[in-house]
Image 1 (cartoon, rainbow, N blue to C red):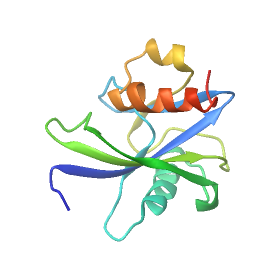
Image 2: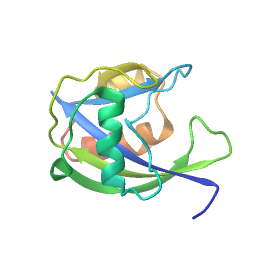
Image 3: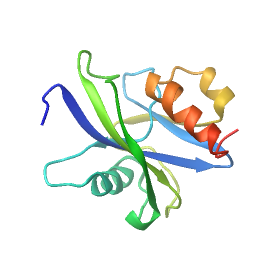
Image 4: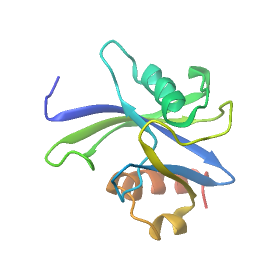
Length: 137
């Protein structure tokens, strides 16, 4: 495993043609929800765990569609790269509540994402991909 990389799982949660983004405490940058893949976990298992820890929602691996793995500069770790295995989350149980280091959440369309500070991965990869699929406005 490349030590310059942080391996993460990311979830694309969409409601009313808007994407959920979050920011961690002390950061101004909104990112795709998810988190680090722990030893022995699959990306799917990591995302299911992170959605529970970060938002108190239950996600089933049956509701995950893998979009792909992407390499991008790490927003919160200068000089490192993130390899983020990204999933479209089609359904979840519970109301999204901020928890475990999450300072803020927003639901944005492509215009809304231009009005806040979002990660380059979100702006350059996620937003165009979701627009192309007609999943967000």
